[in-house]
Length: 275
Image (cartoon, rainbow, N blue to C red; front, side, top):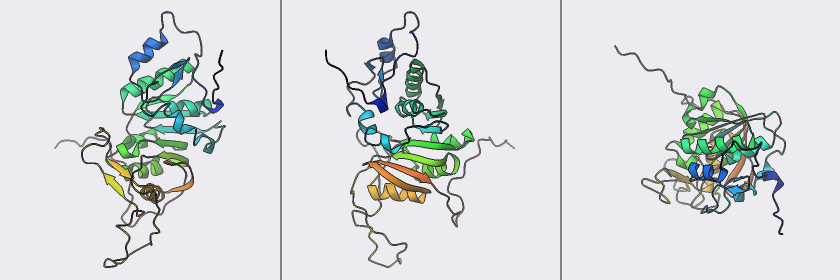
């Protein structure tokens, strides 16, 4: 008999108690599908044929050690939680509070099911990133993985996280395309200065997708590496490490109010009265 070696930092989900009478885990997992996260629930994989392999664990293993192993007492916000892989992992590390938000009801149902089976208390909410000020709370760790390029207003999203959600660490990932080179950029260039490096591969650039990329109409903006890092700095996040090619661990830092005012005003939800 062969022995399966399991990465201790990513323990598969086992039943917290005996399943209710008549509950068929495999059938329920299939009913909730298709899953974007491959999560092993009591030995059953939710997305065994994922086009990226054992995703997202194949990615997570490259940066898991960049995060504290013990999150006791920490609060965590997982933005765009999908099927809940990262929320579950942070709870396994002892996080006192995990709030996970997504706009996809099916993903939230999947994540809630996985957490329920594991006996892990996670607060899943149907919420867009534009609404995070409603939470009225700042978190020790904000997870913002694989969301930026799906947004029409990516820099605003980072500004909102800085202003309303983050108080310490930000775990960030975005799909990147274009050059991996980082061009040295001066603080300012004269309007007529031909030395401005706009055409160089390593200048911060973000590519706009008008129609689709990889068949997905929600892939709107795809930055190169220089742009990803510049956007993080501009929004008030100091990059502390880059443990994986597209993953950054950042620390919140204060920003001076820009001359043109706040860049992340949270819109009022009140409906104006009709005259």
